[in-house]
Length: 276
Image (cartoon, rainbow, N blue to C red; front, top):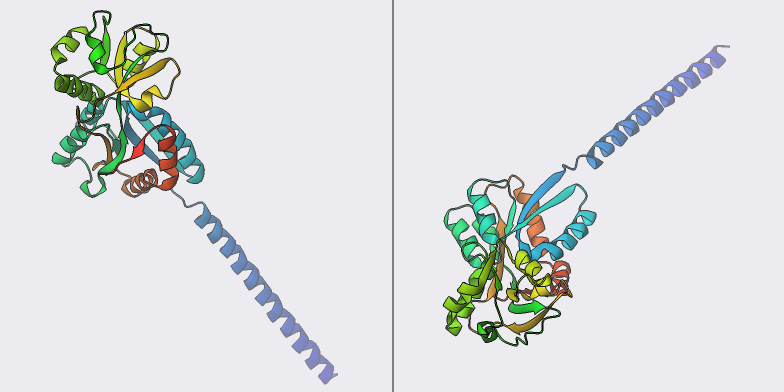
């Protein structure tokens, strides 16, 4: 009887130990699952505000969709306008994480005021300046010089003070020697897409935009590219705004814009990778 009691006692003790071990194991597993779940849901949601030149509207809308699908938790909010207007917004403290300008001038001005993270600023894209007319135009324009014709009553241009496309246009016509004549016929828009819209609707006889703008519609046709050397290269610099509260996420998106995947999309819309 004593032997049997001892055996039973030993068996009971082992059972209790196994049970306790099992409970401990179960408890640990539960904690591990909770910990894993916490880690999986710990990703902080980030909203990046990107101020971009109006000529980037179509391509950036496509890149936005692509990036958000592959980067859970990241929301991209784009604000499009003339580069000068966007520069002013940054100078006045408007919330922004990234700035993409259609010219170096605006980026340089912000950098000189220490409003950009200088080590992130670089040239991203190149574009071309072109003369366009409505698709059904019968004026027979074939060159920038043709805008001097009496048949051309109104020319659409970007505002000279704030829109790079307007500044490039002025440079072209100044180089060709007849800016004064063009200025008298000019109607100035707040951004390059406004000028494009005027030409599409035949509100003006012709306009100066970027090649990439003209590629977005079949309502206009390109009649000429700006003569070689008549204006500076159309360079689009990009960088992270110094006041950004999402510096790391902004830097990651900026790197994405330079990637082969993004460049293929830019090229589809007529941009090319900056070579300088």
